[in-house]
Image (cartoon, rainbow, N blue to C red; front, top):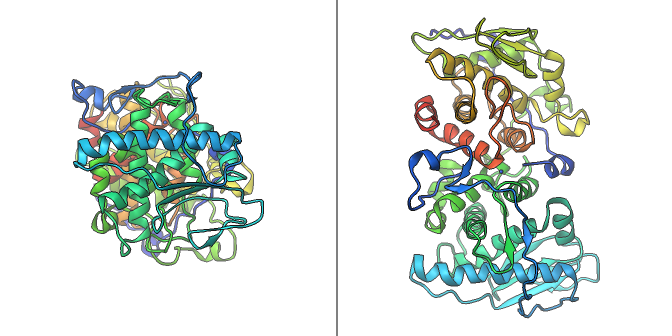
Length: 485
């Protein structure tokens, strides 16, 4: 279909980002692809499995009745936070003691020192830094130390996301020790490569826990894995931190992607993360954050007629194809005999129309800081894009209900996001943090991005994000239509 260039398209428009609050992140939900012996292609990409593992709803956290690890921890007060951390490190090191020889042909030497401190108390010095006020966990390569704050960080993670959040954070820190043992990094390696590798190594370990192998911990692949993704979302970089910055870890989208690489493909995939791979894949741009004049004064551009026209241009660029007529977008929602009305956007196959609830779309498009329950304009636009993706599926003869439909829809919405990023249909463009708005939407209990025509969604936030990431990475609808069937 011939694209229409509007004045908005020529001038461009930046999508703004709303930072998700802890309250939003705490409500988050949870595949990924790992070759699993005996698992067919259909199961690998199934909406009811995570990388070949069944989605489970059992208990997550410490195993009852298991004897605590006896690792020495410098500075420990003997409390619950340190007990949790000690057991976590013990299980992580048990995994690497097995994995390094098998996968990399190297023996794993345990971390030389574990150190606990209280960031609310008198400061000490660890790795040349003052611990007072250091709400953090970190690895110090100079003396091979893993340290954590028992005063604020670990209790906050446990209270907000559950004990497996603490386990995941410490798995990340031990992942840094693994890097130096494998020599995949050195003093010249950028922060973002080190951190993405560590997220990936943590994902590989968490897969081992989910398979039931960890002595001290158990993890459900439903709510338990959801807690870990929520943690990664919460500890993401802010929009002001580009990937070339010292200490950069990545956006939520980037951190979840790296974690999923490890969970799905194992530690050999993690070892391949280097400068070139990161520069090809990372989504948190270097340099200053893109802004509009309105953002510079603290006002967020409204989701108005011009914005919706710009959105429609990008949707046409992503999805319209020969022989398929794109849907009409109506400013009002209407009853549909074939499908339920979903908000803030609904697709009716009878009329080939997407009906919008403009008031709800505007509310959803507000940033979380405004207190209206919004997730930002990119997240809101992605929900509309998901309904356009349904229309495209309808046009080429795919069913519009069921879990496979919901996964295809998430994948195709990722294709739309890639179209925006590439500037095809140049009315809109990505700014740092926009993809995180989509991640927040997909990790929430209700996700329209990963839902069929009736709003029935993929039950796992992990699987939702993976499908979206597949589409974003492939940047082609063909993959989505062939993979999720």
